[in-house]
Length: 429
Image 1 (spheres, one colour):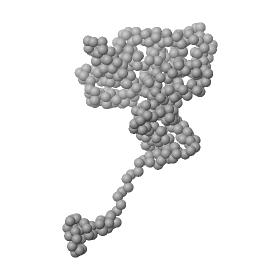
Image 2 (image 1 turned 90 degrees about the vertical axis):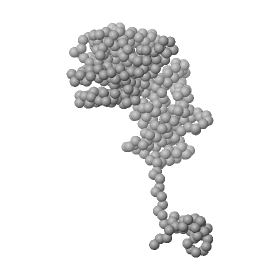
Image 3 (image 1 turned 180 degrees about the vertical axis):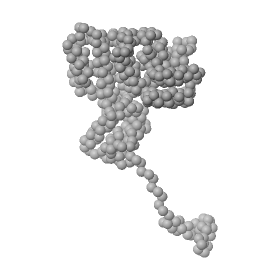
Image 4 (image 1 turned 90 degrees about the horizontal axis):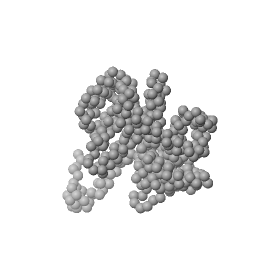
């Protein structure tokens, strides 16, 4: 029978007359430790080996492997696209780069490589804040735990995360963080491609009905359509008046589209579920815009809030504008539609691509036309929804289910996102 363990100040059971703590306590504790199984080892961090490999790279005198691994990181960032946390703020990047390119115009002609370096350093200093680096580090580590990545991919992400780490206090130099160079290079390539595509769209719209377009311009447009943008860029640069003509035509086109959206006979640019989603996420700032208060400061604040909300909505739903543009382009060539309607969609596609936030706002504020339902069932569900005095996630569920049954997964997902929004932002109509 095992004896009961004595207290520290009890007499030791051995009969020595000493207190237990001064006699056999230490010996008994040692025996207990020897007979007890060791505690379970803490689970190793899932990226422990990859982080160590990245640290080992940084400790080498030859930086070749670091350079190659950062190149792999750039490929991963390209493949994932402009996801949150993996790019500089898009608006800040565009404003800074556009401004700097104007200042570096002469330097670009003298030494393009040096000008590109100056642009990179300036952008990294401007946008590579401590807060951005922290978001980048957190995002890269989260991405590194994605299932299916190779060890090389995980190590590239871990290396980027280590290079994005900053001291909690004190100064640091963003240009000394090569991971920011990787982000800049990827984002600059994406931005440049977008600028060239926008230029091609504007020039094509400008010259589509012109009889006096030169053979050089036609050839440049043809090559741009095949993916070769350089001839088009050179053609535009060779004509100093062309940029102002494009800008003037863009302003006229936007005005035509806005005027057309006010006409009762032309269709809405939105699908029904797009209008539901926009109504959900913009209802409060829109209501504040319509009743901003008596003073100019309140009105200005209401306008700024509404603009910011619209921009955030389009950034949150990155497919929204793309879906609209694709639909407009298809309808602009639909022989079933009236010529006036086709011309409207042609203009609208160019205008919405050039200025998506402005044109979406114009459609919300000025359009007199309701979206056309794709079936009688959708018409009924939409009418039931519009008859309600408030919207809850449950109110939108029949519409989401109907879109799923209609094999409209994009629309159903957009309604689901509206439901998520309404859970924390109920709408009272």
